[in-house]
Image (cartoon, rainbow, N blue to C red):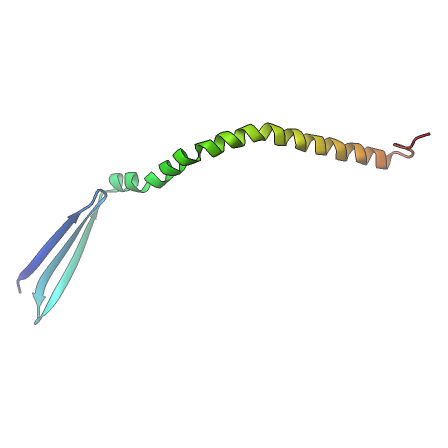
Amino acid sequence: MGRLACLVVRGSAFDWEFVLSESDGGTHLVQRTAWHTALLFRVLSWPLVLFRVLSWPLVLLRRRQIPVENRRSLERIKANLEEGVRASTPGAGLLR
């Protein structure tokens, strides 16, 4: 039983090793993986960084809209409260 081939693939966050050997007239494949967790976290975190970089214009635009939306909401709340007061007070809002 001898080793036929060994292939090692080195990645930034992992290393793959494939070992081919003869086994009872056939071929036996062994796969080994070594993970480097610190590098793995760095590799997997790039989509989040990309999202943050690409979304900052939307954040700035949203921040500009918030005061206007707050003002509109307060105006609606005020109108609903005044409408409720008029509805609960007899004769309120009627011209004499």
